[in-house]
Image (cartoon, rainbow, N blue to C red; front, side, top):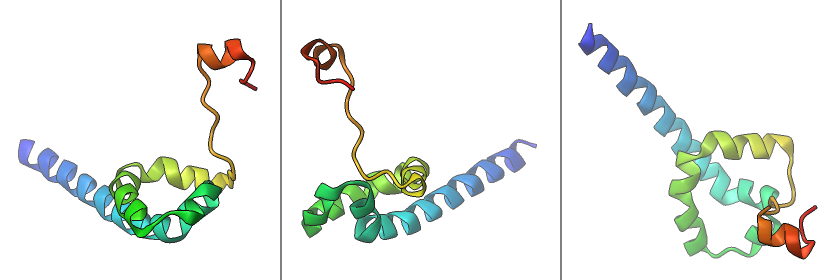
Length: 87
């Protein structure tokens, strides 16, 4: 029983990683430009740096791509709220 559970866990993790790598390849070439306009000017080094994060966080980035968000999220913290900069 334990071997079966371990096999399923490894299989699910493997599928997650494979999908993440495929998504990250698309994301660093075209997808990040859709989410963040500042990424259009990103260098190849920038794209290499964001590749591992895009592969690991692909569900969140895929959701942002599908929602069509053009602007990066605005950070909300007590300092910004006090200064009147929060929406």
